[in-house]
Length: 141
View 1 (cartoon, rainbow, N blue to C red):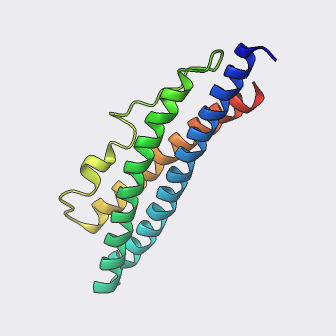
View 2: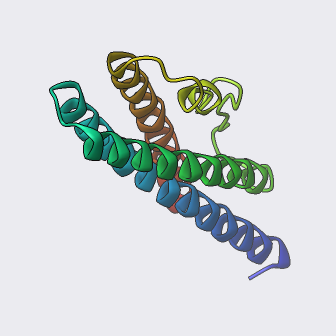
């Protein structure tokens, strides 16, 4: 194998590894958001103090995972720049997961929290789909 072929394989492996890491954090964030949403529903229907505490704990966990996912996605984008012939992958970091900037700040009412959890899940799901698509392309190349 030529040095160029080996180098390409190495770059593809690094990109796949970075994408899988990003997916790990995204999936974990999705699970936390699901849990926070479930606890939020219970809270809305009279769950009381415990459900409020658990909901906020799950939201805090999701926030941390979102930050880790954001860093992993940046690494994935950098690794993809080293790989030729891969469809361009770009997630607007200003849009993607921007809910973290307001999601965990100044929560006013339970229904607003539920709406934000739902929006966050949609953004995470969109990122998961994009990463899976690119990983599929990388694994076929």
